[in-house]
Image (tube, rainbow, N blue to C red; front, side, top):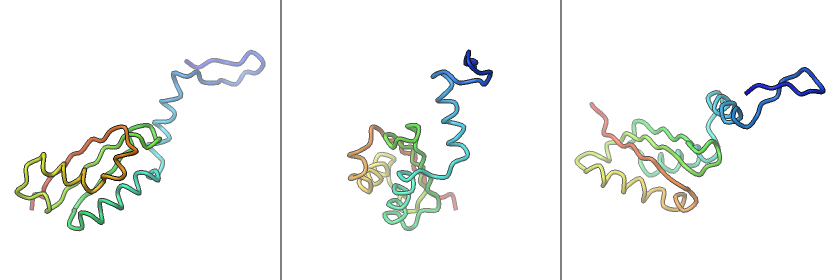
Length: 109
């Protein structure tokens, strides 16, 4: 909750509001260093990808990512095989992650 310091009439935020501020900051911030690195690796490993989106869902600390990638390379492969391809491409980076969400697809046209 918003509270006022007794010595001054300016509000300060308690811990419960800090994550909200961080989320708002992340909405307007550019990609994190980790997001850029993972995106670059995926672009190199999947040159035919038509869409790659990497999002740090750990609040910016780089511990957990969500990856959405659309590529012809996934054509005629089961979802588990597609995810294995992404895991293989990022095997070194995954060692330093807490978790990873992967969403893969094949272009419609």
